[in-house]
Image (cartoon, helix red, strand yellow):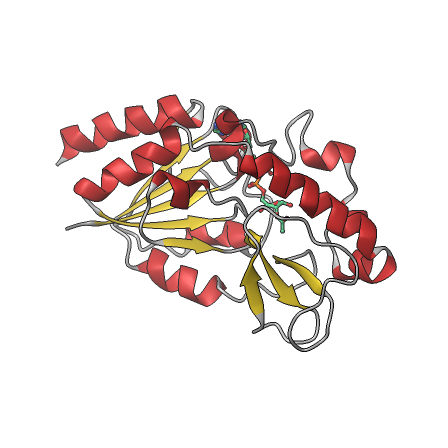
Length: 229
Ligand code: OAD
């Protein structure tokens, strides 16, 4: 079976009602990265940061996988599929995808502020100041904030290097190191990008562009791949 990597960003969950970050009306228009998505922000105003992720967890509880997530599952019938997502939602898993790697952490998970290996799945519950892990330290969202290392990057690069097909969906490729993944593919890898604004994204020169929203774009990709093989 050929290896297909689906590299997703916020745009794949847009049709599930979850906001992207950099589109007009996106999350970073209403919140400052520096107030809610850095370790310094958490040190300065932990309540505000916890509230931001509590709000996003509630939104996630009320969101459902869309056609694009479901197509990711359907591709498993024909390919060895690895999902590498920048998203912190659980919609790929809820759609039924088997192998999902979260580069930027997961909304459902919290971890001890003292010991990153103490983690817990709180599903869609809220975290309050004073909620502590077994080591007595405050829980924090298990999210990779700006300025923090991306622990799963090496694993993701190794997966992309082996890919026969790399499908990038719904990411502006603005945030590094994650965005650099598209350059890790080998020279024979077939590359596609699905995004309604694909022509505005840098570094897509060697990719086949499918300028569509994720749901329509994934169906079109499926048809293109079926004609190829
Ligand atoms: P962005 O908000 O930067 O980019 C979203 C992309 O999705 C854009 O290229 C849009 O054109 C596209 N898009 C919008 N609607 C779409 C739809 N219906 N179907 C397909 N594509 C659509 O989001 P990301 O690239 O995922 O990190 O952002 C990367 C990282 O920046 C996130 O993981 C997050 C953020 O800050 C952290 O919080 C650490």
